Image (cartoon, rainbow, N blue to C red; front, top):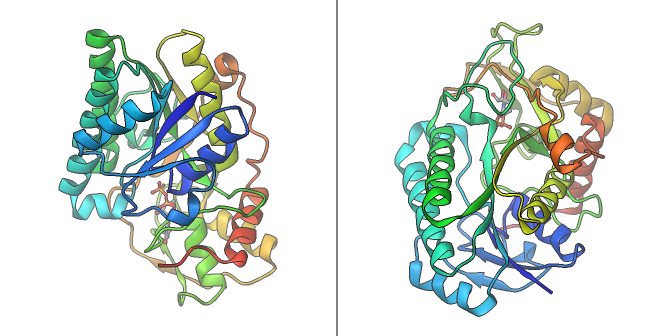
Amino acid sequence: MPHVLVTGGAGYIGSHACKVLARSGYVPVTYDNLSTGWQEAVQFGPFEKGDLEDRARLDEVFARYAPVAVMHFAAFSQVGEAMANPGKYWRNNVCGSLTLIEAAVAAGCLNMVFSSTCAVYGDQDGVTLDEDSAQAPLNAYGASKRAIEDMLRDFEASHGLNAVIFRYFNVAGADPDAQIGENHVPETHLIPVMLEAIEGKRPALTVFGTDYDTPDGTCIRDYIHVMDLVDAHVLGLKWLEAGKGSGVFNLGSGTGYSVREVIEAARAVTGRAVPHEQGPRRGGDAVRLVSGSLRAERELGWRPQRSDLGVMIADAWKWYQRGPYRR
Ligand code: UDP
Protein backbone atom coordinates (compact mmCIF):
# COMPACT_ATOMS: atom_id res chain seq x y z
CA MET A 1 0.00 0.00 0.00
CA PRO A 2 1.26 3.52 -0.74
CA HIS A 3 2.66 5.54 2.15
CA VAL A 4 1.68 9.12 2.92
CA LEU A 5 3.87 11.21 5.22
CA VAL A 6 1.60 13.03 7.66
CA THR A 7 3.32 15.84 9.53
CA GLY A 8 1.40 16.66 12.68
CA GLY A 9 -0.24 13.23 12.53
CA ALA A 10 -0.39 13.16 16.34
CA GLY A 11 -2.45 16.34 16.44
CA TYR A 12 -6.16 16.99 16.18
CA ILE A 13 -6.70 17.19 12.43
CA GLY A 14 -3.67 15.09 11.48
CA SER A 15 -4.81 12.11 13.57
CA HIS A 16 -8.26 12.19 11.95
CA ALA A 17 -6.57 12.32 8.54
CA CYS A 18 -4.54 9.22 9.46
CA LYS A 19 -7.69 7.33 10.40
CA VAL A 20 -9.34 8.13 7.07
CA LEU A 21 -6.16 7.48 5.05
CA ALA A 22 -5.83 4.04 6.65
CA ARG A 23 -9.34 3.08 5.60
CA SER A 24 -8.79 4.53 2.11
CA GLY A 25 -5.94 2.19 1.20
CA TYR A 26 -2.93 4.23 2.35
CA VAL A 27 -0.39 3.79 5.14
CA PRO A 28 -0.16 7.09 7.06
CA VAL A 29 3.31 7.69 8.48
CA THR A 30 3.06 10.21 11.29
CA TYR A 31 5.95 12.66 11.61
CA ASP A 32 5.49 14.72 14.77
CA ASN A 33 7.67 16.09 17.56
CA LEU A 34 4.85 15.71 20.11
CA SER A 35 5.22 19.35 21.14
CA THR A 36 1.45 19.67 21.00
CA GLY A 37 0.47 16.24 19.66
CA TRP A 38 -0.22 12.97 21.47
CA GLN A 39 1.43 9.61 21.04
CA GLU A 40 -1.94 8.02 21.97
CA ALA A 41 -3.46 9.60 18.85
CA VAL A 42 -1.07 7.69 16.56
CA GLN A 43 -3.10 4.54 16.00
CA PHE A 44 -3.29 4.04 12.26
CA GLY A 45 0.27 3.62 11.00
CA PRO A 46 3.95 4.01 11.90
CA PHE A 47 5.20 6.85 14.06
CA GLU A 48 8.43 8.73 13.39
CA LYS A 49 9.25 11.28 16.03
CA GLY A 50 11.01 14.34 14.64
CA ASP A 51 11.13 18.09 14.19
CA LEU A 52 10.14 19.85 11.00
CA GLU A 53 13.41 21.72 11.08
CA ASP A 54 15.52 18.56 11.35
CA ARG A 55 16.52 18.02 7.74
CA ALA A 56 18.62 14.91 8.38
CA ARG A 57 15.74 13.22 10.18
CA LEU A 58 13.32 14.15 7.38
CA ASP A 59 15.72 12.77 4.76
CA GLU A 60 15.88 9.50 6.68
CA VAL A 61 12.09 9.23 6.88
CA PHE A 62 11.58 10.03 3.18
CA ALA A 63 14.19 7.41 2.28
CA ARG A 64 12.65 4.80 4.55
CA TYR A 65 9.04 5.08 3.31
CA ALA A 66 9.23 6.66 -0.16
CA PRO A 67 5.84 8.34 0.39
CA VAL A 68 3.65 9.13 -2.61
CA ALA A 69 2.67 12.42 -0.96
CA VAL A 70 3.02 14.58 2.12
CA MET A 71 0.07 15.87 4.09
CA HIS A 72 1.48 18.80 6.00
CA PHE A 73 -0.56 19.61 9.11
CA ALA A 74 2.21 20.37 11.62
CA ALA A 75 1.96 24.00 12.72
CA PHE A 76 1.11 26.26 15.59
CA SER A 77 -2.41 27.56 15.10
CA GLN A 78 -3.61 29.82 17.90
CA VAL A 79 -4.50 33.40 17.13
CA GLY A 80 -3.94 34.70 20.68
CA GLU A 81 -0.51 33.11 20.92
CA ALA A 82 0.43 34.34 17.44
CA MET A 83 -0.32 37.91 18.51
CA ALA A 84 1.82 37.56 21.63
CA ASN A 85 4.65 35.55 20.13
CA PRO A 86 4.85 36.04 16.34
CA GLY A 87 8.42 34.75 16.18
CA LYS A 88 7.26 31.30 17.23
CA TYR A 89 4.86 31.28 14.27
CA TRP A 90 7.31 32.56 11.70
CA ARG A 91 10.04 30.19 12.86
CA ASN A 92 8.11 26.97 13.28
CA ASN A 93 5.48 27.36 10.61
CA VAL A 94 7.53 29.05 7.89
CA CYS A 95 11.08 27.79 8.48
CA GLY A 96 9.77 24.33 9.36
CA SER A 97 7.72 24.16 6.17
CA LEU A 98 10.68 25.32 4.10
CA THR A 99 12.84 22.51 5.47
CA LEU A 100 10.07 20.00 4.81
CA ILE A 101 9.50 21.21 1.25
CA GLU A 102 13.22 21.09 0.49
CA ALA A 103 13.45 17.55 1.87
CA ALA A 104 10.39 16.47 -0.14
CA VAL A 105 11.66 17.77 -3.47
CA ALA A 106 15.13 16.34 -2.79
CA ALA A 107 13.49 12.95 -2.22
CA GLY A 108 11.45 13.29 -5.42
CA CYS A 109 8.15 13.42 -3.50
CA LEU A 110 6.32 16.09 -5.48
CA ASN A 111 2.79 15.86 -4.11
CA MET A 112 1.81 17.89 -1.07
CA VAL A 113 -1.51 18.56 0.62
CA PHE A 114 -1.15 21.66 2.74
CA SER A 115 -3.22 22.93 5.69
CA SER A 116 -3.80 26.60 5.17
CA THR A 117 -6.44 28.76 6.76
CA CYS A 118 -9.18 31.28 6.13
CA ALA A 119 -7.07 33.54 8.37
CA VAL A 120 -5.12 34.39 5.19
CA TYR A 121 -8.10 36.52 4.14
CA GLY A 122 -8.34 38.66 7.27
CA ASP A 123 -11.35 40.88 7.65
CA GLN A 124 -13.47 41.48 4.60
CA ASP A 125 -16.63 42.71 6.22
CA GLY A 126 -19.83 41.15 5.14
CA VAL A 127 -18.58 39.30 2.09
CA THR A 128 -18.32 35.57 1.87
CA LEU A 129 -14.88 34.44 0.92
CA ASP A 130 -13.86 32.59 -2.17
CA GLU A 131 -10.39 31.45 -3.14
CA ASP A 132 -9.74 34.60 -5.17
CA SER A 133 -10.65 36.98 -2.34
CA ALA A 134 -7.91 39.40 -1.38
CA GLN A 135 -5.47 38.23 1.28
CA ALA A 136 -4.89 40.47 4.29
CA PRO A 137 -4.07 38.35 7.35
CA LEU A 138 -4.63 40.01 10.73
CA ASN A 139 -2.16 37.94 12.72
CA ALA A 140 1.13 36.07 12.42
CA TYR A 141 -0.70 32.76 12.17
CA GLY A 142 -2.51 33.79 8.99
CA ALA A 143 0.58 35.57 7.69
CA SER A 144 2.75 32.49 8.22
CA LYS A 145 0.30 30.33 6.28
CA ARG A 146 0.13 32.83 3.44
CA ALA A 147 3.93 32.83 3.25
CA ILE A 148 3.96 29.02 3.00
CA GLU A 149 1.39 29.15 0.20
CA ASP A 150 3.75 31.49 -1.67
CA MET A 151 6.64 29.17 -0.98
CA LEU A 152 4.72 26.22 -2.44
CA ARG A 153 4.05 28.19 -5.62
CA ASP A 154 7.74 29.00 -5.97
CA PHE A 155 8.69 25.34 -5.60
CA GLU A 156 6.06 24.41 -8.13
CA ALA A 157 7.76 26.71 -10.64
CA SER A 158 11.27 25.57 -9.79
CA HIS A 159 10.84 21.85 -9.02
CA GLY A 160 7.40 20.80 -10.27
CA LEU A 161 6.03 20.39 -6.75
CA ASN A 162 2.24 19.97 -6.91
CA ALA A 163 0.34 21.34 -3.94
CA VAL A 164 -3.29 21.12 -2.98
CA ILE A 165 -3.80 24.00 -0.57
CA PHE A 166 -6.81 23.76 1.72
CA ARG A 167 -7.91 26.91 3.49
CA TYR A 168 -9.75 25.67 6.54
CA PHE A 169 -12.53 27.56 8.19
CA ASN A 170 -13.24 26.58 11.84
CA VAL A 171 -12.64 22.88 12.29
CA ALA A 172 -14.79 21.24 14.96
CA GLY A 173 -16.18 17.92 16.15
CA ALA A 174 -14.38 14.62 16.56
CA ASP A 175 -14.24 11.10 15.23
CA PRO A 176 -17.83 9.81 15.70
CA ASP A 177 -16.34 6.60 17.19
CA ALA A 178 -14.66 8.83 19.83
CA GLN A 179 -11.42 6.90 19.25
CA ILE A 180 -9.58 10.22 18.73
CA GLY A 181 -10.55 13.86 19.16
CA GLU A 182 -9.47 17.41 19.84
CA ASN A 183 -7.13 17.89 22.77
CA HIS A 184 -5.08 21.03 23.13
CA VAL A 185 -3.27 21.99 26.32
CA PRO A 186 -4.13 24.69 27.10
CA GLU A 187 -7.37 24.67 25.16
CA THR A 188 -8.27 27.92 23.39
CA HIS A 189 -10.79 27.00 20.70
CA LEU A 190 -14.40 27.93 21.23
CA ILE A 191 -16.20 24.57 21.24
CA PRO A 192 -13.80 22.61 23.48
CA VAL A 193 -13.45 25.60 25.83
CA MET A 194 -17.22 25.66 26.08
CA LEU A 195 -17.32 21.94 26.91
CA GLU A 196 -14.70 22.51 29.63
CA ALA A 197 -16.91 25.25 31.10
CA ILE A 198 -19.98 22.99 30.98
CA GLU A 199 -18.06 20.29 32.85
CA GLY A 200 -16.76 22.75 35.45
CA LYS A 201 -13.15 22.28 34.29
CA ARG A 202 -12.97 26.06 34.01
CA PRO A 203 -15.17 28.62 35.72
CA ALA A 204 -16.68 30.09 32.54
CA LEU A 205 -16.25 30.70 28.85
CA THR A 206 -15.24 34.29 28.15
CA VAL A 207 -16.96 35.66 25.05
CA PHE A 208 -14.30 37.69 23.28
CA GLY A 209 -16.13 40.85 22.25
CA THR A 210 -19.86 41.56 22.25
CA ASP A 211 -19.78 44.88 20.39
CA TYR A 212 -18.96 43.69 16.88
CA ASP A 213 -21.06 44.83 13.97
CA THR A 214 -23.01 41.55 13.74
CA PRO A 215 -26.65 40.81 14.62
CA ASP A 216 -25.85 39.79 18.22
CA GLY A 217 -22.53 41.61 18.59
CA THR A 218 -20.31 38.49 18.60
CA CYS A 219 -17.96 37.18 15.89
CA ILE A 220 -19.22 34.88 13.17
CA ARG A 221 -17.40 31.76 12.04
CA ASP A 222 -18.02 28.92 9.61
CA TYR A 223 -17.65 25.56 11.36
CA ILE A 224 -16.71 22.41 9.49
CA HIS A 225 -16.61 18.86 10.87
CA VAL A 226 -13.13 17.41 11.13
CA MET A 227 -14.24 14.18 9.40
CA ASP A 228 -15.60 16.13 6.43
CA LEU A 229 -12.41 18.15 6.36
CA VAL A 230 -10.14 15.10 6.24
CA ASP A 231 -12.35 13.45 3.61
CA ALA A 232 -11.47 16.44 1.41
CA HIS A 233 -7.79 15.66 2.00
CA VAL A 234 -8.15 12.17 0.61
CA LEU A 235 -9.92 13.63 -2.43
CA GLY A 236 -7.07 16.16 -2.74
CA LEU A 237 -4.55 13.33 -2.59
CA LYS A 238 -6.36 11.45 -5.35
CA TRP A 239 -6.44 14.65 -7.40
CA LEU A 240 -2.65 14.91 -7.06
CA GLU A 241 -2.13 11.24 -7.88
CA ALA A 242 -4.28 11.71 -10.99
CA GLY A 243 -1.79 14.37 -12.12
CA LYS A 244 -4.25 17.25 -12.01
CA GLY A 245 -1.63 19.67 -10.67
CA SER A 246 -1.94 22.28 -7.95
CA GLY A 247 -5.11 23.79 -6.55
CA VAL A 248 -6.47 26.03 -3.79
CA PHE A 249 -9.73 25.15 -2.06
CA ASN A 250 -11.68 26.67 0.80
CA LEU A 251 -13.04 24.07 3.20
CA GLY A 252 -16.07 25.46 4.99
CA SER A 253 -19.76 24.73 5.25
CA GLY A 254 -20.85 28.11 3.88
CA THR A 255 -22.92 28.83 6.99
CA GLY A 256 -21.84 31.28 9.68
CA TYR A 257 -22.68 31.07 13.39
CA SER A 258 -22.04 33.71 16.01
CA VAL A 259 -20.36 32.86 19.30
CA ARG A 260 -23.72 33.26 21.02
CA GLU A 261 -25.38 30.87 18.55
CA VAL A 262 -22.69 28.27 19.25
CA ILE A 263 -23.29 28.64 22.99
CA GLU A 264 -27.02 28.15 22.47
CA ALA A 265 -26.42 25.08 20.28
CA ALA A 266 -24.18 23.57 22.98
CA ARG A 267 -26.85 24.13 25.59
CA ALA A 268 -29.39 22.38 23.38
CA VAL A 269 -27.11 19.43 22.54
CA THR A 270 -25.78 18.79 26.04
CA GLY A 271 -28.88 19.83 27.97
CA ARG A 272 -26.52 21.70 30.29
CA ALA A 273 -26.00 25.39 30.99
CA VAL A 274 -22.90 26.96 29.44
CA PRO A 275 -21.35 29.24 32.08
CA HIS A 276 -20.12 32.28 30.20
CA GLU A 277 -19.21 35.90 30.71
CA GLN A 278 -18.61 38.84 28.41
CA GLY A 279 -15.04 39.90 27.84
CA PRO A 280 -13.07 42.30 25.66
CA ARG A 281 -12.28 41.62 22.02
CA ARG A 282 -9.35 39.30 21.33
CA GLY A 283 -6.63 40.94 19.23
CA GLY A 284 -6.27 39.50 15.73
CA ASP A 285 -9.89 38.32 15.44
CA ALA A 286 -11.80 38.90 12.19
CA VAL A 287 -15.46 39.87 12.57
CA ARG A 288 -16.84 37.33 10.13
CA LEU A 289 -15.22 34.44 8.28
CA VAL A 290 -17.58 32.43 6.10
CA SER A 291 -16.70 30.45 3.01
CA GLY A 292 -18.63 31.41 -0.09
CA SER A 293 -17.02 28.88 -2.35
CA LEU A 294 -18.23 25.65 -3.86
CA ARG A 295 -14.96 24.97 -5.65
CA ALA A 296 -14.12 21.89 -3.55
CA GLU A 297 -17.56 20.47 -4.22
CA ARG A 298 -17.37 21.21 -7.93
CA GLU A 299 -13.81 20.13 -8.61
CA LEU A 300 -13.11 17.48 -5.98
CA GLY A 301 -16.63 16.11 -5.58
CA TRP A 302 -16.49 16.93 -1.86
CA ARG A 303 -19.80 16.70 0.02
CA PRO A 304 -19.74 17.54 3.75
CA GLN A 305 -21.84 14.98 5.63
CA ARG A 306 -21.55 15.86 9.33
CA SER A 307 -21.11 19.62 9.38
CA ASP A 308 -24.39 20.45 11.07
CA LEU A 309 -23.53 22.52 14.16
CA GLY A 310 -25.47 20.22 16.51
CA VAL A 311 -23.74 17.10 15.11
CA MET A 312 -20.31 18.70 15.48
CA ILE A 313 -20.96 19.65 19.09
CA ALA A 314 -22.46 16.23 19.84
CA ASP A 315 -19.38 14.44 18.43
CA ALA A 316 -17.04 16.76 20.36
CA TRP A 317 -19.07 16.20 23.52
CA LYS A 318 -19.00 12.42 23.13
CA TRP A 319 -15.22 12.52 22.80
CA TYR A 320 -14.88 14.93 25.69
CA GLN A 321 -16.93 12.71 27.98
CA ARG A 322 -14.96 9.65 27.02
CA GLY A 323 -11.91 11.44 28.43
CA PRO A 324 -9.27 13.11 26.30
CA TYR A 325 -5.58 12.25 26.48
CA ARG A 326 -3.90 13.79 29.50
CA ARG A 327 -0.34 14.99 30.01
N1 UDP B 1 -13.94 32.68 21.21
C1 UDP B 1 -14.47 33.18 22.39
N2 UDP B 1 -14.00 32.69 23.58
C2 UDP B 1 -13.06 31.70 23.65
C3 UDP B 1 -12.53 31.19 22.44
C4 UDP B 1 -13.00 31.70 21.23
O1 UDP B 1 -15.32 34.07 22.37
O2 UDP B 1 -12.67 31.30 24.76
C5 UDP B 1 -14.40 33.22 19.92
C6 UDP B 1 -13.30 33.86 19.09
O3 UDP B 1 -13.15 35.23 19.42
C7 UDP B 1 -13.80 33.64 17.68
C8 UDP B 1 -14.56 32.32 17.77
O4 UDP B 1 -14.87 32.13 19.15
O5 UDP B 1 -14.73 34.65 17.32
C9 UDP B 1 -13.75 31.14 17.28
O6 UDP B 1 -12.47 31.20 17.90
P1 UDP B 1 -11.45 29.98 17.88
O7 UDP B 1 -10.28 30.37 18.72
O8 UDP B 1 -12.18 28.73 18.22
O9 UDP B 1 -11.04 29.84 16.35
P2 UDP B 1 -10.39 30.91 15.32
O10 UDP B 1 -11.57 31.57 14.65
O11 UDP B 1 -9.54 31.84 16.09
O12 UDP B 1 -9.59 30.05 14.40
